[in-house]
Amino acid sequence: MTTIAALDALEILDSRGRPTVEARLTLSDGRAVSASVPSGASTGRHEAVERRDGDLSRYRGRGTRGAVAAIDGEIAAALIGREPRQREVDAALRALDGTPDKSRLGANAILAVSLATARAAALVAGEPLWRHLAAGAEVTLPRPMVNIVSGGLHAGRQLDFQDFLVIPLAASSFSAALETVVAVHAATGELLAERGLSTLKADEGGYGPALPDHRAALRLLDDAVRRAGLEPGEQVAYGLDVAATHFFDAATGSYRLASEQRTLDAAELAGYVEQLAAEHPIVSIEDPLAEDDWPAWAELTARLGGRMQVIGDDLFTTDLQRLERGIAERSANAVLVKMNQIGTISETADVVAHAKAAGFTTVVSARSGETEDDALADLAVGLAGGQIKVGSVTQSERLAKYNRLLRIERDLGEQARLAPLPETLRSA
Ligand SMILES: C=C(OP(=O)(O)O)C(=O)O
Ligand SMILES: [Mg+2]
Image (cartoon, rainbow, N blue to C red; front, side):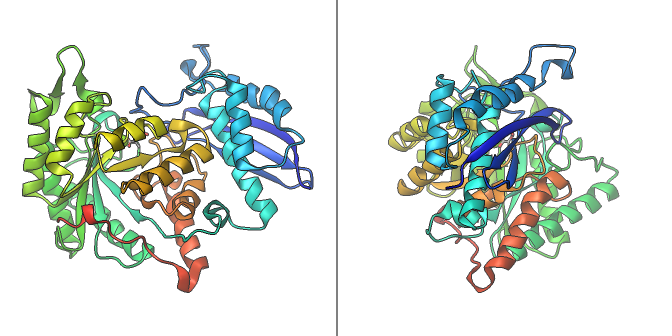
């Protein structure tokens, strides 16, 4: 029997240069695995809570020493001697924490250990992580949706909407899909340079140029797709992450589009998205409304959900209870899946399974602050998540995931299969 012999943690830095947690799990046979956790900027208020130190002299109060100490101390004491079994370890972590939002030990500490447990369990089973997570079920390579132009909290609020993404429609393999995206990304850079606009990158590697409004970003995508020798709506379509929570004014219940100097109510914002989708091949919209605007979500989904993917990110926060409400009220038809929003691998897997059973599509997602950890790729394949959102294609913390997917595709050989295009993405 192989058991957990030691657990310790280290404070490392994420892609924004902010501290985050890496856990190391050593097995009784001497082998060790590590796992590190990401951190969001446009976080939802219902997410599991990261533990951050209050000491302003260290990393401006963003340190993770408390989370590291929780792993080295309480968590290690509770898990040493146990077998690395995912559900048992995750249940023990939840019980030890004792809070509904994992704030006592910290969702960052808990996820680092949960993920290290997944790696350890795969190692003991002699399987790659994706195969272990699949537990015998059919696997697929995820279709990437990739941020090309950034706004919102990831790009100094140049635009209000956070992500303008491209989705390869025609590719029949993951590598071909990635190749399409890389061509559009490169063409976008060329066009920006030719037009004297900034080619500096935002947090997730998308471009963050000073564009006058959201339509300008969509026109730029049209031009870039054509420059890449493709046709918008044919080989590629677009997604938006509106991230509306972050420009919602709770006092007035309205949405403030600062870049367009106007304020809209929920129905007007839905109408605006609908108009943009009539002008450009937009097939997916994420967080088109704020995280607690439930009735407006149901109205928007009734209006647009038949012809596009409507994804809840801040709305669901990878939380099964919130997802269940969303399924019952038809608030959306897709869920963004972020491991650190909920804090354990087994709860993440439950959300994916539940969403699929209800006919929702799932998009496995990285955070804007990432590490070199590539487990997200294994998660997307192992849970057959269907789609993946990692950010752009020029930064190593993103490429760790894309390159891992390329390797998994190679290793699967003849059995490698890109997830089929869901019905909701076919409207372009
Ligand atoms: C990845 C996202 O951003 P963040 O990690 O900043 O929440 C998102 O909103 O989908
Ligand atoms: Mg989002």
